[in-house]
Image (tube, rainbow, N blue to C red; front, side, top):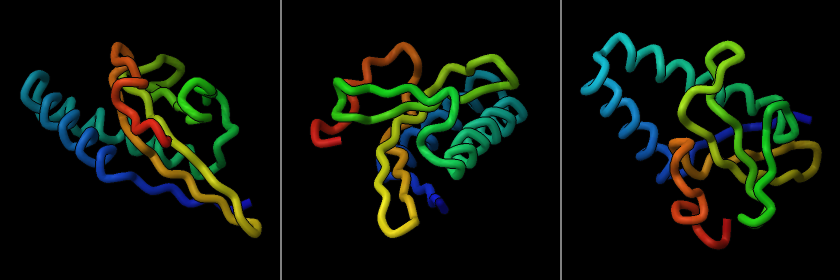
Length: 112
């Protein structure tokens, strides 16, 4: 199956905020590096919503998350996404990019 991945408006704002904060706190080189890690995680979703290490969140209406990874080590953010399949094509929407310390139930829409 062929999958496409897109970022929601809130996820794009999360992404921008993460990169701005990283630039301010750790410098532009680290921000560029972290941006690449987030993009790589999103590109991994082109393989579909079942890839390892995706985790189900049934209490959030079936939303799943994929950790941003640096090699085998998890970075500090998670990509929360929903998906749908139709006619041999799949669509994944990244709903939010949240820090691992955040409660996703407080930051995801109830209908996610």
